[in-house]
Length: 165
Image 1: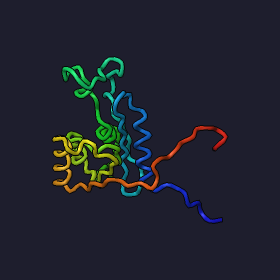
Image 2: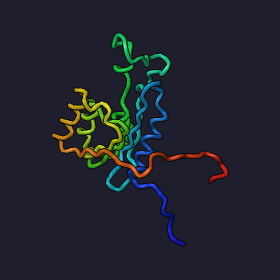
Image 3: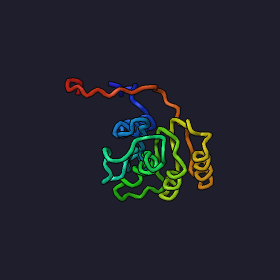
Image 4: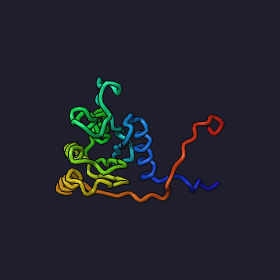
C-alpha cells in the first residue's frame, strides 16, 4: 500500500501548532501563538500572548486605549517572548520561530539575543508602524532570515470526536 499523499508539510504543521497555541490567549482582541523549532524539526517551545505568571487575567486590564497604565500593553507578554521564556533550557541557537503575526521590535530583540536565525510568519499587517520597521531593521542587521509563509491549505480542521481515532 502506498503512503498517504494528503499529509501537511512541516511548515503547515509548525504554523498550525503556533495557531493552536494562540487559542490559549485570553486577549479579547488579538490572539497570537509562536512555535520554536530546531534544525531537526523538533519543537523546542511554544507560547502565546498573555500576562506573566502570577498576574491574574481577571485583575489586569485588557483595554486597548486610554491611559497607557490602564491598557494591556505594559503588561502583556507577546507569544514570541513567551515561547523563548517557556523553553525548558534547550539551546535555541539556529532555531526558527513560527508566528502568525510579524514580531514587534521588543520581541525581535529577544529573538536575536537567543540565536533564532529565521522568523516564519503569516501576516505583516503592522508593516508600516515604527515598531515593525525597527524590528525588520534589527532582524536584518543580525542576519535573521524573514520568511512570509505561503501555505497549500487555507484551513486545517481538528476534530476531537472519539470515534475518529
